[in-house]
Image (cartoon, rainbow, N blue to C red; front, side, top):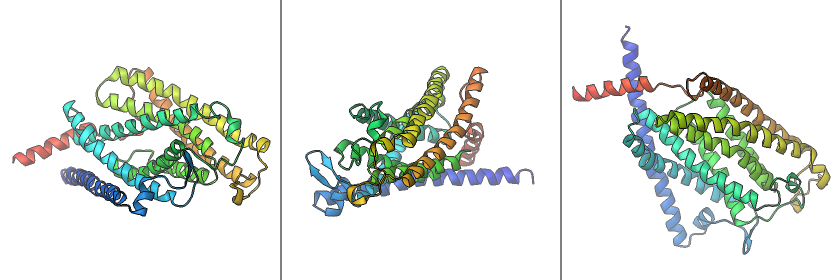
Length: 349
């Protein structure tokens, strides 16, 4: 009886692992085929494919309006990000993990997932900061509201905003494919709130403040993914240094800068807006919508305070000399190594 549970657990793990590998292959093939069909259809002149691949509502050399057809662009990029995630994991980060001796498969998988996340956040944080730097609202929150509504958008900001929306929608799927962590519910809630904010701010012409919020969030995610990558590569000192940078950046960006954005949303709009609901003019910011945004911001802040308490625990571990460890993860690497050894023995027999 004492050996039945370990045997059942081993069989279940082997089945789950093979299902994970098959799913990665499946999503790569299917999403890759969908992307190729979309590109081929666009080349053939399909109006639907054109809406999927190119921005809609162009009204000038570098001026775009918004509308329902933007959903097609978002939908394509949900599929494209799923393909890119699968491609990067399977053909770039998994092979690199094998070359560096990362074992077992589960550990390589988590390394590969963090590799993709690091790549994404590096690109989009730099892109978002570039857009902010060349905008009137760079360190000036009053321009979130001045000249509202901001209906017309440049190509870069529209692409950035819609692709970020697509990424967070795709991440709801990825969260259920990746190994679940202790904060799975908090992560799902965070993504749902973020998607709600992105979609509503886009629709109501508040993309300026959305750009600022995304930039204040993405830096810490970038540093955290890098710290995890260094941890898997056994670069303990570099990992601890990167985690220290992350632990400093988090309160500055996610609690400092984000608090400034919350304050600006609460106390600045009435100085510059008439706070009227006039959809025909692109105006949607009223006292009611203001309360809605503040509620969503504060809910997001509560989740981040919960995560910050976890960061403090890791900082305490580092001070004790134990090294940075992700307290959200269920670390089963040693157990997985034993399971893989058992699999190899069975193959030999």
